[in-house]
Image (cartoon, rainbow, N blue to C red; front, side, top):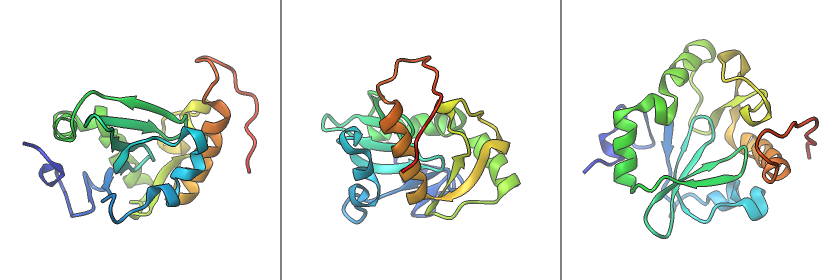
Length: 169
């Protein structure tokens, strides 16, 4: 059985040099922190982790893990238990956590604190590039506010839609 304790560099709060951060749903109220910002897009799951780029991971009522793509407001079940999800991370941290990209970002920008993220200056969903030059370190609540604002505006757009304008609250 694989759990978060088996992940490299697990320090009680994160693993993989902070690429994934863990939350105890009994002590962290993500709904009050940022979940409610998403309105009707807020995922109905039990949050257990958020990666350094702001992607959230939670457990659905059926026990499967779901990924909440914070910048689009999409919830995607991966049809795997938490243990299977942690196995996926161990097998390929680059595909699951963008680990090499994370390490490159640390070299260029420094390591974000536990309450900070690497945020894209122009989010990928808005045409931004997945490059170190497109990253900044941002306080996580501020990052989630920005992503929720984007998600509420683009969530129902068809794939491939041209986005000419995003308003900021």
